[in-house]
Length: 215
Image 1 (cartoon, rainbow, N blue to C red):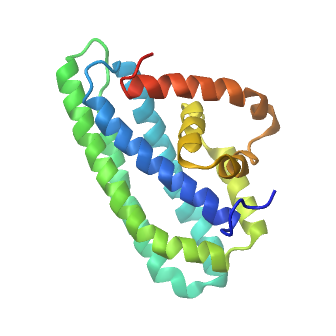
Image 2 (cartoon, one colour):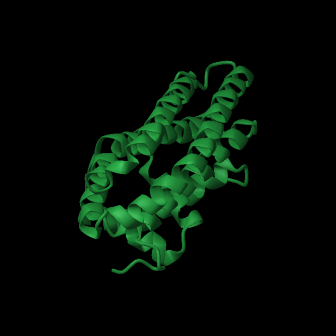
């Protein structure tokens, strides 16, 4: 399948991943403020974010950057600067992961701690993406072949931890066009494809809960 716009598949898929990160980090902040949102739902979104953000930047540092630098060694300083920012994100994610979310605990304190940690992650992600995209998008377009991207994307999918994966489907549907989402999901393993309708339905329910608009 060809990319749905003039952008390369690498840029489309990376842009959508970044938009998911923006949307999901903002949602955790606002959801933590709502007393009606169950702590279990907040915990699920928190775990999804911690796992996916860590995996995303680790695959960039250890796999994507070396692929780009093979043909564009002059980008080394810019990419290493982004890795330094990934380390800052790791510190914020560690703070978010450390919040103990327990239904038996003192809810007001849990929500306050979760919201503070979520704000730190959101703000770090937003600032980082503002720095990363002007460097990364041209690099993906100009210095990474379609074959290299397909190989990288397959490895990312194969190694993504299975934590609330349905939320990724739901967020993708919100940030991308149907053609863009189809491009991303085309790389899923064959056994997962028949599960997509049920995953979408579960994501819709869970996102409604997180937004305080019903269960």
